[in-house]
Image 1: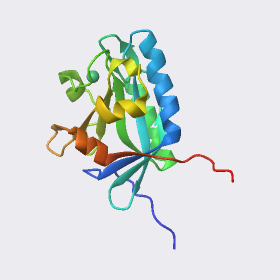
Image 2: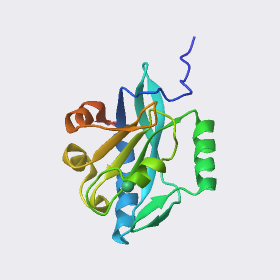
Image 3: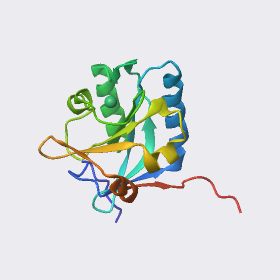
Length: 174
Ligand SMILES: [Zn+2]
């Protein structure tokens, strides 16, 4: 008997385990676009482990239409993301985007999320990702959770620390 992959993101993720291997490419992507003073976005995908814990194994760096005032996923890119991820057996667990300054969810962020379905986490990275992403997570990042009624719940700092964890997945040579 083998375990079956969960095919739908739960309405609430207990937490997000982020494999460390996704951090560097994500950071580089956000930072490089930030050098042009443009906001950038990415997606985090992976699997559900246990009942509702998300395990991020993949970072998706799609083409976005970005500017200093925001960024958006073109419709054809959105469709390709869903298709590619669906075929891989993974799920979109979170969206990430940068801001020029403070991290928060604007009205545009509320309305134009990658998907409307509940359980999606939306991570906003401040200052065009100029600072070490892991350190930023500890103090100045913003995380919002899509609720079943369509609202966004802003996670308080202790909740971010409790629910989002980085886990090593590198090679170990002994
Ligand atoms: Zn924003």
